Amino acid sequence: MHQLTAHHLRFSLEVESPIELDHHQGSALRGMLFNALRGPRNNPTLGFCTQRHLDTCAECPLVAVCPVASLVATLNPQAGRGRDVPRPYAIVPPQNDKTRYEAGEQLAFGLTLFGNALNLFPYVVMALRQAGAMGLGKRLPRPETNGRYHRGRFAVQSAQAINLLTGEVQDILEPDNPMVQRPDLPVTHAQMVELSQRLLNPALAHAANGHHAVSTYQRGSQAGPVEITLQFKTPTRIIEHKQLLKEPHFSPIFHRLLDRLILLSREFGGITPLDQPEVLDKNELLGLSDQVELVTHDTRWQEVWSFSARQQRKTPISGLVGRATYRAAPGVWAVLLPYLLWGCVIHVGKNAVKGDGIIAVSS
Image (cartoon, rainbow, N blue to C red; front, side, top):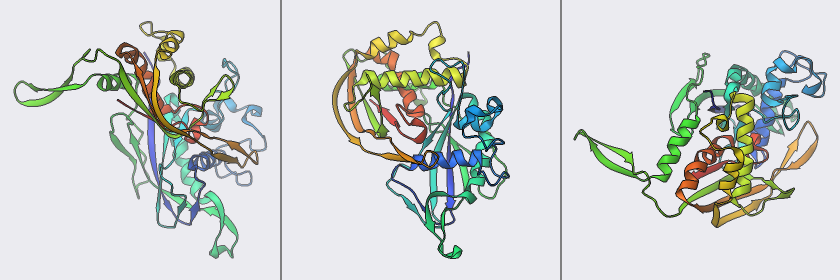
């Protein structure tokens, strides 16, 4: 039975002229990808949009078969919450405070494609290759153009596929090699279940046939409550009862994550894990999430704004960063943890496509 998969790609860019980004680099990277796929209005040889005179994809008669709409302006007239559905990708910006890159330096970022969006991978590679000449980041003066302002240029140097759970790596684009390999290291729900079992059950070393030391799981070894820690690596913005969530209570975070996972699965995976008869339904999962107690947290609210060149205005993408530790019975975690682990891949909350809501889970 088909389920959602995720393919994480890591691109390495070689900077050709200085690139300067805001602290929240994901917004600029997402904008660069959108503009590269769509292409500039005055240069039809770049990008893939054939109806650039239109203001939105919703007006386009080709929206159902357009790679631009499929990736960055997803629409579904039959969707339960309206035509807009989650975009089938998420940016993973550089996890550092560096905002300026000089010529000759490397800028690396991640891009995760969900489900059948992998079929559009060739468009992503072609768009990124074209984007280098269009530039990235703030407009800076260039001496070679008599001080006129331009965005920093770059070239795609290499790319890898990385399984975010197993750590496996596959080279899909190598320097000086025009050939691109199809990514083949998917994250699956079965892997989420396997990892959750490892987190909940301590490993015991034993000898296999008296020759090799291996590990097995001591199932049911933890009778008392189990603590799980979430690290909010980038601003995590959760809306609960029309209010911003300023304290990391588990239930609203899990609720938003589950909603996102279900929508991504239905739109791009063909089926959601909740459609399997042996799995509890959404309401039962949310009921179990109410049993998870916030034990302690060291989080703060990070104020961040994103500028939209298309809308010509700033929008808030602030959220919680830091750590929070939660406690629940082992049986509760056994059910919830595989879904919680999906948050490490699909992100949680608002602005996930720009790199907000990146979390890490540990025991």
